[in-house]
Amino acid sequence: MARAAVLGRLTWQVAEALEVVPETPRVKTILLDVPGWPGHLPGQHVDLRLTAEDGYQAQRSYSIASAPGTDVLELTVERIDDGEVSPYLTDELRPGDRFEIRGPVGGYFVWEPSRGGPLLLVAGGSGVVPLMAMLRHLDGAGEDVPATLLFSSRGWEDVIYRDELERLDGGSARVVHTLTRSQPDGWTGYSRRVDPEMLAEVGPATDERPHVYVCGPTPFVETVASALVELGHEPSQIRTERFGPTGG
Amino acid sequence: MGRELTPIVSRGFRGRRRDEGPPDRVPPGQYVTDDFPVLSAGPTPHVPLDEWDFALVGELDEARRWSWEEFRALPTEEVTVDIHCVTKWSKLDTVWEGVLVDAILDGVQTEAEYAVAFCDGGYTANLPLEDLTGGKAWVAYAYDGEPLDPEHGGPVRLLVPHLYFWKSAKWVRGLQLTTVDEPGFWESNGYHLYGDPWREQRYWGD
Image (cartoon, one colour):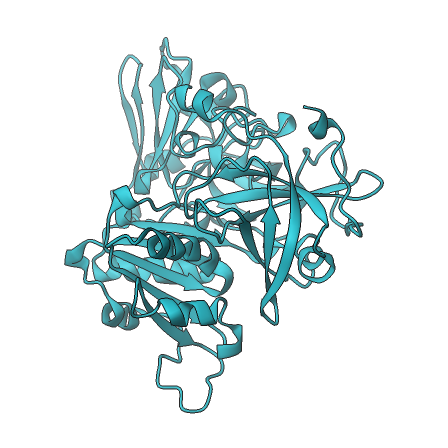
């Protein structure tokens, strides 16, 4: 395959943690130095491999949070309580620690400026991570593409990238939150699970033929994707990425 | 490369290992789960059974087509197999009911050496024909004694357990027999053309 030959083999590369930044009580962003990183597209992920002293290894996949072209590669990891890899990354990892990654992986759940817009991004919890790479890319590249993020979180303190999203809102993107379990005093935004009515209100309308990206836990993605089809969005315009409880 | 032979140790990582599973059944880089995670590229399609059919097309003497009733009248078997997803989970002893692909290809004259499974929603997956024959692959309509859920590929999905699970195409509507190996959906998006979990053929070039 010609494309495989161009891309070459995905080899394991050493990644060194530069910083571990808390995003929410359960989520941290890991800033990585990866010498020779080949670059990536917004929406792609990496395979991450940990090795114990006796040689035991565990691999998982994590979405890339950083925009293409930045020096530091960022992964955002949600702690899965009974997980094997995510508790290490969120609780144990310190600057200077090293592990291996391989990537970037995935050629479908990606957005490039050539795809155009408008963009509708729908995130549930840590499903926002690959969508954030798209928003950061839009913002950094100054792309004139209308983008909307509809972001479902449990509560205000669970909103990943909250301050950055506040900054982006009204600038390069429109950000709409829904808080499904608890809301701060005076909250005037949505406070329920994403449903067809909410999607219709938030837009863009189906006749604008938005490119839609949906990422979150499986039930969230099933519900949102079905609702979008019900509203009249073409299934082929809807790209999904799902993760289950074993994502840890 | 040397660094692949001597992976670096991650300080303080011990691993939980509760789910390591029997080494002869869990391919490299996989872990065992009891869940059944879902991975799809788009919305879950829903096709009424009275509009559903299964087709055999491409390089063969005459295209064939089965309605739902005709498909369900084919001989079936129950199989217990291990499945391995490229996203790293493996699930052991999964129980399926389905029609052997051999039964679907029974009596077919073809020069084809490959097949493309085509599906509702536009998904495709390519496989060598010899991986679909010889009692190694099924068109499955039930999982764990129940009709297959739409989100897991119902009404039927391909079941090719010796390859990574994306080859077990969900919502499959037929097989196109081909003389060349034409990359399917994931195979055009960075994933391996063949996908043998025991050789860890996850991505292009693996």
